[in-house]
Amino acid sequence: MTSRTSAGVRRHGDGPLLRALASVPALTYLVILMAIPLALVIAYAFLTAGRFGGVQGPVTLDNITRMFQPLYLEILVSSVVNAGIATAFAFLIGFPAALVITRLSPTWQTAALVAVVLPFWTNFLIRTYAWIVLLNREGFLSDGLELVGLGPVEFLYTRQAIILGLTYAYIPLMVLPIYASLQRLDPQLLEAAQNLGAGPWRRFRTVLLPLTLPGIITGCLFVFIPSLGNFVIPELLGGGNSQMIGNLIRDQFLKSRDWPFGSALSLMVLALLVIIVMLQASASRRTRKWGA
Image 1: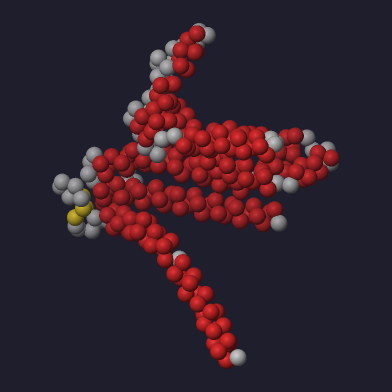
Image 2 (image 1 turned 180 degrees about the horizontal axis):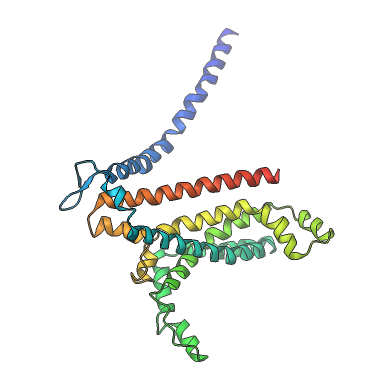
């Protein structure tokens, strides 16, 4: 009896140890690929750029004060606006698409979801170059407008081309969270609202939209964050005419060799994203309380 009890105690005591050992790979991943790089970025932001690149002393706040100059704040604001517009377009396209997918049969739902994620199976750079073929002055879009007397039109190397590219690149990240929220929605709620005399717009505004708000917020976050830091699409589709914060940070590291200032700009973007994520978490909590 005593030996069985001791064995049971040992087995019970092995639980925390096993859980700790199981968490070692994840913790190692977080430390090596997140904590250490973040610590280096924070440290570099308060150092001085070397003459031939790299960092050196002394410790200074010049990089922090420099990033609040009007030129860099204007680029940040422009980046936020571009990412916000792309997120809005992704929502306007993604919500109806997700709603239509939920109304399909299970077989066609699977096919539609595969079609949504299919672009992710192609290299991001190749997809961006494909838009160059479509949007240039001799491209299919300009030629089509010319046939109906509206062209040729120069779409490439404009702000509109950047927003279009960002919307296209990340719209699957909007469709999938909204689809998941719509799938969890009880259809009897919409039927009850209809039986009580609510029209389509009122059902959408008072039932469908509030109950799928967590998925909408998540989708907006998934589109906005990568759009804000993207530098490939502004470089290829914008031609450098509309610089975004991602391009500025890349140039500081790879062209100007000013790692401290690039790190300071990265911290500014990171702080903005942390604020956005906190607002998203607060909105999600309020939505859950409202739903309860």
